[in-house]
Every structure is written in structure tokens, then in C-alpha cells.
Image (cartoon, rainbow, N blue to C red; front, side, top):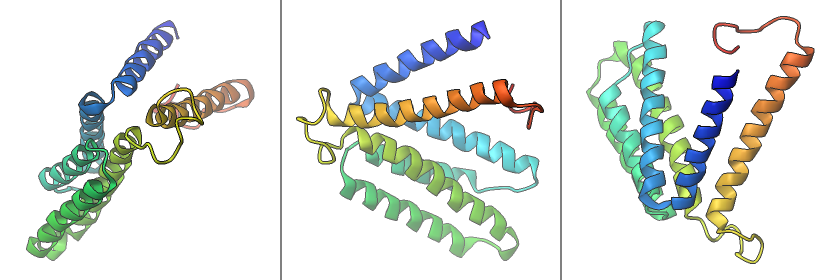
Length: 175
């Protein structure tokens, strides 16, 4: 448990530093995390016998996340359209027997590209909150709010499970 707490503290400090720095530091970190998540997704699907189109899916994900670093909704939407055009091009060239791989590829691009991309886009959003509403930069506040809510719900779920749970649901995944 001690190692877990130390790792969490170091990780939280690193995330807070990246959120504060913003710009391409945060976008680069988000890109790395999104691509690592995509590789883990591919590994999981391979375990179940599903093969995705990893190179185009990686490219589509990277395009979406990097475009979010410009903090422009218009460029992000354009990048999403470009990424889906890339995947459409892929659809036209595949054989019907790997349609499952294509569907999982498209889902992966959407889930990781748009999901992580909007996190980077959120950092640059100044229109959602007035600087008079919060004492820090609005984009920093929005990301911190999302992170604190996520961390709090995970922590309380863990503590509730420890206090009230009788049987571990998935001991091979989570302690």
C-alpha cells in the first residue's frame, strides 16, 4: 500500500504540473497516454482474437489529440473529420471478413482520440467560465475539477469496497 500511495502522490504532482504548464507539454503527455491506452486496447483485443488496424487507428488518434493542442474547436472538428476520412479510406480497401477489426479500429479512434483530445481542448477553453467565476485560469479549473471528481469517486469506491464488500469481484484486475 505504501508504494501505491507514493506512486499516486508522484503521479498527481506530475499531472498537476502538466495541467498548470498546459500548451504542448500537456498535449504531448496526453498524446503519449492516449497512444499507450490504444496499445493496451489492441493487446486486449488480440487476446480475444480480434485484430485492429493499428497504424491507421494510431494515426487517427494522434491527429485528433494533436489538433486539440491548438485549443480550437474548429481545428479539432476538422481533425476528427480528417481522421474519419482516413478510416473511411480504410473501409473501402478492406476485405469483408475483417469488418470486426475495422469496427473496433473506428471505436478505438473515437474513444481514445476524441476522449483524450477533448481533455487537451478543455485546457484551452476560456469561453466556458468567466475568469471572475474562478480564481485560477478557467481551463486549469475545468481539468482539475474533472480530475478531482474522478479521483474522488475512484477512492470512495475503493474504500466502500474495502469496508462493505464481502467478495472480490475481479481480483486479477484490482486489489
